[in-house]
Length: 337
Image 1: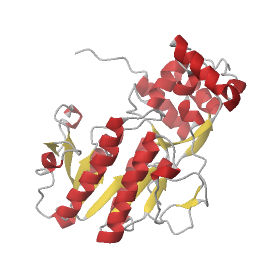
Image 2: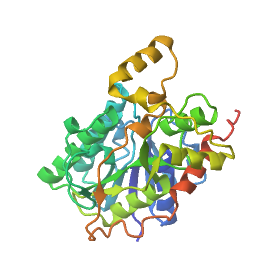
Image 3: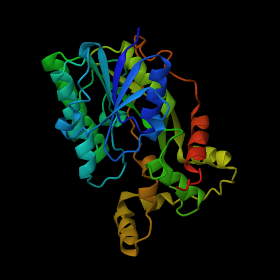
């Protein structure tokens, strides 16, 4: 049976994979994109394109005007990602105001189901292991960084609507997403460019990565089989900085020189002096470039054996292959106009 999907954030790498998977299933797809966003990625596809901004409700009226709203599923995949510790007003506008507006419009227009792209980093690090497929509680004051805090705030709002309005919403919480389509100016794109161009020595640490194609498949699985109010964690493999960069070197066909930023310069006792040095000299701080490896969530994720939603959602792509595809994508030459 053909289903109607509404999708925000469709022009991102994740959004494009979601559109392709939904069309392959024979579903109808309607996307919302800002007026100035290039939608040529959908040329030749049977996709309805509506223009509007999630943080301006009035611009979404036509997008939500569907024939059978109760039979529709909206996937809210629009987000701004940054691991920077600095304040970002645009991030709050998109990640919080946008999510709140989309949720309110879903309830107002009686959209059958909302699937929200949250983040594993919206969950507090401390505490018992998180079991995917259960109801989670979010508190922006228990997580660090604008990205995690905005995701926690939006997730808490949606869970409140689930509780008070009995609204049919499902949350998907991926760890750090990589893979083809990764923007060159993204956090991970900057890591690759900085390392391969030998601009800044990397710092020790590690992170859990997940492939964008697995996230797309997981979102659709949650949309089709997820339990109202449940959160589904999409996680992949842990890579230390050295392991990650070894895979990067192999993919790029270069040698890993083994040089790392000294660990003692990252200790709290001297960190503020190191930070001051880079600020005064206007040099690139390795902590900023490689922050993804030092801000890794230490939360534990488990399954209790009843989380059948995500079974079969994995594409089987290894993180090593995902890193290879990311390197190939980021290193593509710029095309002229």
